[in-house]
Image 1 (spheres, one colour):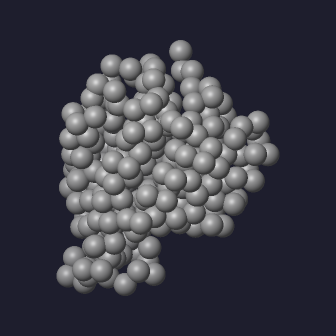
Image 2 (cartoon, rainbow, N blue to C red):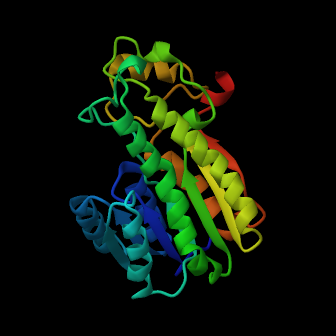
Length: 262
């Protein structure tokens, strides 16, 4: 029933952990891929990996989507090879970087520059890439947009799990993801009935976290562990395919029961 073979999937943030896993899964399912990211090296690695593993077409576009001019360039690049889009997945996001001053720090030390950058990347860029690609999505027979948000877009963090770790929970991350979750609903109404728009909100994804943090976070889930990239793939395939043809404006939590146990 999940048949997305020969469909064109555009993935923003495709060079990241989640984005690259989604690109791999969709290529395996037979999709043609357009991978967008600001990291040329990550895109190059992704293209080599996918072309070696699957007999599929992958096009890469290296741009910073927080720059409005680059968003228009993306459409022109797509039109060089394709005249429609079937699937748009927005996994672009500013999550955490200890090298950004005023970001991965306590509330009192969070600065305006990373706040604005998070809003530009996590929220504004997604709105305008969707707006720009709307006409190409409308040409698809069953177009689906999937935005990757976070549990922190709906629920407040438990700051106790961050104590005695090198991690923090920047306000701009949660607030931008909250905006994205609401924006999904707004866009679902604005783009119906031709285009479906849904959100996936993952819980914490394990990436060599501080052991103290991993233990405390895992204890807050029903399944007793942090998430993995592959945990998101099933919901992605569901929302990308006609199995979810009557699903729009929804937010699917993939969090091991964190939101329930909390």
